[in-house]
Image (cartoon, rainbow, N blue to C red; front, side, top):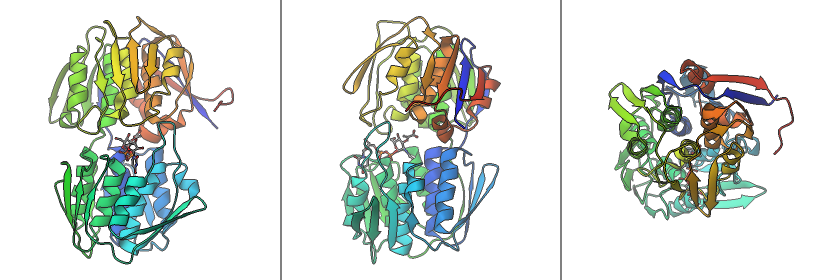
Length: 425
Ligand code: EPU
């Protein structure tokens, strides 16, 4: 049955929160385990719906997947299928990431075409074009992509846009290709570096991950490995913004400040006091946040995955107003209507949003439209007068591990209840 989060606003967040492993890295590492036959162990995997779904994708392919807390053991010895059905891809479009490793190991992959979602059309043309340059042949029929390659060949691929998923799919294919592959205009996200480290520990040869040029020398065989996922910079950023919005003081235990340069400098500009060391990041906001402008860009730019949360904080910011520009996804302002229902004053024009800070938001029933839009409504609920009801909370569960218990430990008043009325879509 569908569930709703009830958040009583007005409690400042205070205390320590342990940052989980990065969803957007763990998902790719789990998929990359397909490259080697045998038992791989991945530690600090967030136990969230998306990672459980990736476990189901691997099981569907014939792998055995065993969870022990946040450690996942994946045994790929019995993988005997290259088919990823629509039922799984429609639950999580990141399932498309098995394309590269399946092609690399079996020379064939059949994966349902992911559709668009609430943040954009999310095409996969860059994945396909890159793999085609390496010798893969694609066919599309009945909602499925079928890819074949007798032997992938190393080549030079220049991406039109530094797509995270395309860079990852190409890396996982190129590690097993004949010869050297160079990916130009590659994504530079920390998750790309984590994947390169993981593939390296499996026997892959990768240079330049974290820069715009990644060079990969194909090898013939891979060994299973053991790896610990990097901390989730987006979860850490979400709590940092929530702390600032509520005028709180939070220690983000395990967070890496070097993965959050621009978001932290924006929060600093908004008035936060920030300290960081090897243990994590301490953040405190004494006054009402000041308005700041932000422009989303691929890493190291301001992450699109923190844009909605930032807009919630700016909705109550002091000053003449803020301008937020979204450059990565074309429909990532849909949640603005939810914030405006709570009394925010946000106007959008194309990919720009103008936010005039109001003194206080007022609680209302709202919907979580996607993972990060859901997090934005949670932050809005934390600062609103009254009790906010957030429906479609499964979106939030896809990406945040133990969000309510983490918030409650910081002093928030959050409850989960069964949905009382039908969810309108
Ligand atoms: N794009 C294309 N063609 C492609 C690939 C991408 O036009 O072949 C476009 C997309 O439509 C989008 C832009 O390029 O407009 C960026 O897409 P990218 O491929 O970089 O994103 P992704 O790999 O699909 C990952 C994260 C997203 C995150 C983006 C950007 C995962 C599972 N997802 O998506 O995370 O927003 O990178 O940083 O890693 C989230 O966690 O809530 C989330 C949406």
